[in-house]
Image (tube, rainbow, N blue to C red; front, side):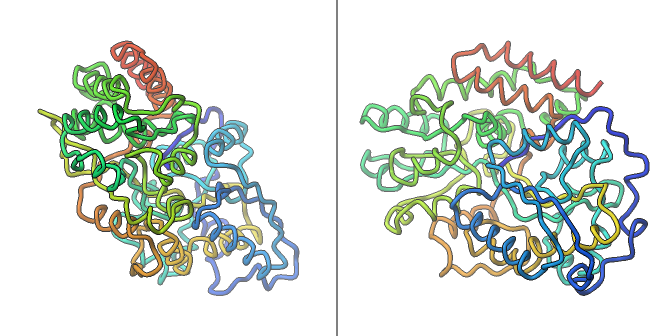
Length: 439
């Protein structure tokens, strides 16, 4: 869900980037804050506000932590996902971060680090080697800067899965589209039949970027081009191949692929729309699985399938791929120290440790952790996505690599594009924003 970054100006960092071990002794094997008689207060921000399985599980774990740690008082802000990153951006710009908070890997972690807003959790990980060593290879990469690790992911997030309703496709005598032409034909046939071909909830703007263009553009340009364009090193977003990718997305809109008012409904409403059979397809991330499990009947879940986006003729990217990244995780404010730091360690471990990793997998969410999938506890569509993710290449998500300003330009530009905007002009806005923010 998938990754919005913030530009931090004037946040001095010098003394805040020391390793945890310099600020406090290494985390103990027990919950020292629990044993300490002194009352400790921590602020906690999270976005587990929905009724999906993972959100309710995480809220239960927070409640359990409060009961198990009577000496730790939590000031909790539960903020809906679509507004969470905006709120975080506001407090980050004012250097008023909560003590423990959900954050994203890649560009957001780097910008928070550069602003002196976060501190590493090396000491916590070193004190829990069985937890640290349980992660899959590369799980800390996007949270690591200068050998310091700033968070431990709660999941693995593919962002561009093409979900489809087997019964609806069969009703229209359609196969699962594997090429762009097949997708456009499916859109035409389903639209003429009076049904929405592809559900879209782009109210918060990030969805079309994270779930569609990140993978669609990679099909056209290839990953190497995107990384160069993001770095402004030998490629630009005004290059013909990127304009072509924008045109492909606009062609999908022109074909009537999405329902009316798609910019006025959010991601959750889109997922419910697909789950209840009101659309034949949906392009969304792995985060949808928990919501689908909560909002669809067993019969509806059996009718769901999942695959990668169709191939593009003459495209430079690998068609057998999904855009994706490490999932969000709990960050730690650079201002937390002393007994409050140990209490924060205990909280992060309680909400991210091996037990929660397994519970996350069992609640139909993918994890980057060595946990065995119990198929009896998950839906058939989750099992299918689990196998799909492990059989394809992973490509970057745009807002996990680009600057905040560049990502905003992509998000806003795609909303404009899907209302008839000029692809060339939108590409220029994206190019200008990314180039300026790197100066």
